[in-house]
Length: 121
Length: 110
Image 1 (cartoon, one colour):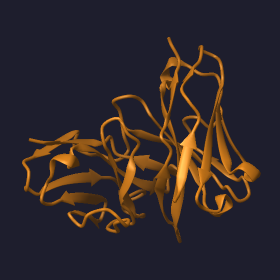
Image 2: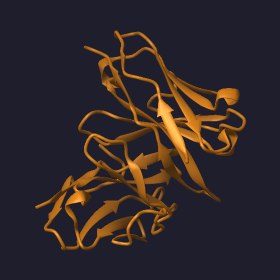
Image 3: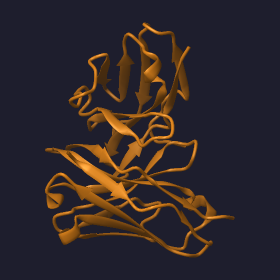
Image 4: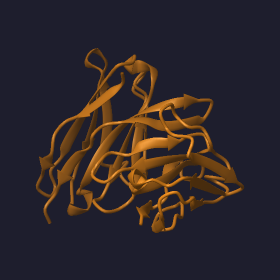
């Protein structure tokens, strides 16, 4: 069965960087794209960007595009999301999601358990 | 301020039918399919409805989705206490070149 497991809770100081990992199993990693979605506690979901697990191509949301880098390591089926220049506004739970679908009809099929990143103000 | 608009809350009694709306624009719902996610308290979201009205295996047929123009709707029939959760709609936005979400609707089963 498909599993997506993320790295643990992080506490960072303002201005620092955080790198969250996401290990996928139960399917061929390079077949499907990976998106990252974050959620400020008590609020809605916000898409941060997408990466092709096949060739590493990326598409970032405008709100974080200057500060985020998404990468992957194919041998370990692991995706990474690095966010730089952290502020208290980046305090959120970060989710890694494995996409499914075709012909432009995609959806977020398998979610990681979430990684809480706290940046004290 | 979310790009897609959902009511912040909804409620119903066990056995009732409830509906949650999701309003967008021509560049998102009007041009692309809608997905719905259920988020139980303290857990990660999970896909409930994809491509407007498709249910993944394991999702009860009490849950159904529909889309018309620039709006979509999630219906839950025969409401159960375990349906108490937050429900999020999502669609790709061609103008923003990004996935956009609604603010989420917290469903309370009275």
